[in-house]
Image 1 (cartoon, helix red, strand yellow):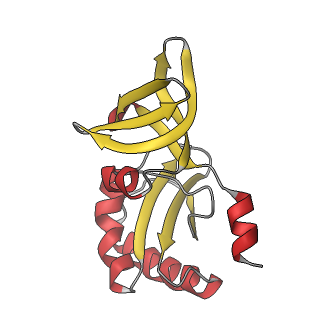
Image 2 (spheres, one colour):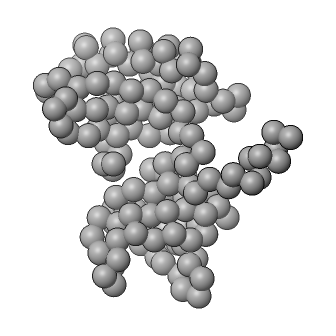
Length: 158
């Protein structure tokens, strides 16, 4: 999964927020065809109707602005339980949750890490992994996702 596209985020965010949703992130995967994935959220959760509304609004905007050359598919969805983290505010908001990180380049021979997110410190992401602390810049992270806690979600629904 690619890192967030800042240019596309800047373009679509006003349209998403105008509909009353939070823009969680925007990813574009090059390929044949490419895939533009937009994650949205709200306090009340996201329905299929919400995704359709955002898709319709963003499709019109993309047709006019034409920021992507070639064919691509547009996908709008909720972030899900394994929510992707894109911006510094996401890493602050979900401090205390377990996360999986994949780095853009190996660090001490590894690219994948899992631990408890501690938030941001000096503009870097801090993750506690057992006895060691991982501190990396946002630009060093290829992908970051929350690790779902299925037990707590199961008890919430009971």
